Amino acid sequence: MTWVFDQHKVIICAGTGGVGKTTLSACLGILAARAGKRVLVLTIDPARRLADALGIDTVNDEEVPVALGGVSGQLSAAMINPASIFDRFIQRAASRKELADRILKNSLYRQMSTTLSGSQEFTSLERLLTAVDSGQFDLVILDTPPAQHAVDFLYAPQKIYALFQNAITQWFVQGPRSKGLLQGLFQRGTKTALAALEKVTGAHFIRELSDFFEGVAEIQGEVSGRSIAVHRLLTGPQTAFVLITGFDRAKLGATRDFIAELRRGGYTLDSVIVNRCLPQWTPNPAVNADLRADEDYQKLLAFYGQLQAYNQDRESEFKLFQEFLGPLTPLVRVPDLVSDVTGLQGLQKLADKLEPYVKERG
Image (cartoon, rainbow, N blue to C red):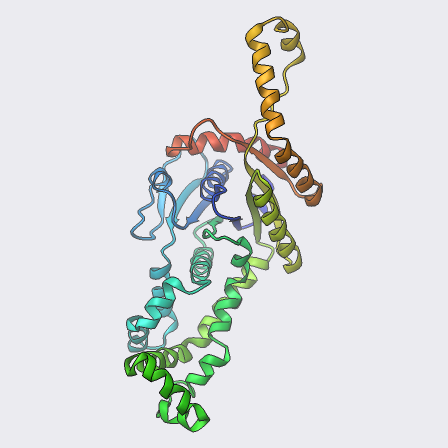
């Protein structure tokens, strides 16, 4: 993984929910700082213990330095707040302050900026692009939003682009700062549809809807341009994906689907980390011979054998996944730990377990 730190400016940590993406994203940040990089880890909705470990304030999204001793690089972390990022984007995209205020106060915008499908992904990518453009960091690591289907992350830019370009937007607006909006709509044969909609939703909703899309029409170009820039960043040579998955059939199956999408889309897959695997233990032959008659040692061997048998199906799935992945993509196996990772010290211990793979790649 030293190679990924040196060859890329962006690492996207992706995977389904519950596989430890946030924890491992932070560990990769620690390893990159050890390698001398100025690193920013961007995370969304971290567990309280991880937020405390990284020094993240979950109320705002300011970048905060993480105090690591004995490293040649620097590690910073920031919380991604979708609503505030979307607001700042609108303020930048709008040509006039009154236009930005009108959009920000619109109730439909308030709903869309937090609940629209793809909005979390879009704001995460917007924050990523802003950090990369700032030039303050050698490497930016993005912990992708939790999602049932990790593949959805790849299509977020296209979803937002389509929202601001599709026929619905054009149906509601004639152009920037158009006059007689409703009259124009009526002239295009939509009077009956809008009248029926007004009966159901009320005139206020129709006014909010019209006002929202009029505002959207004025920032279409900026939104579209930003969506295209984000897509180019994801598919460009400076970005690499590190997929994080779990040690079971469902998680490995979802990761296979994601890898297939990455390959079809021309994205760069750097490595796959399988988290919480059964620890692998091969007894030293000399120790085995010395302790052959030791009753406790034999109990330990028997217990490990039972554990292996219990995990036989998982190991079989892991081998099939390894064959699917092929020999060119590194597969990192992180053992299940006896206790939860807590505090910065816990993150550093987990990073220690990943470090041999870093040195092996380097």
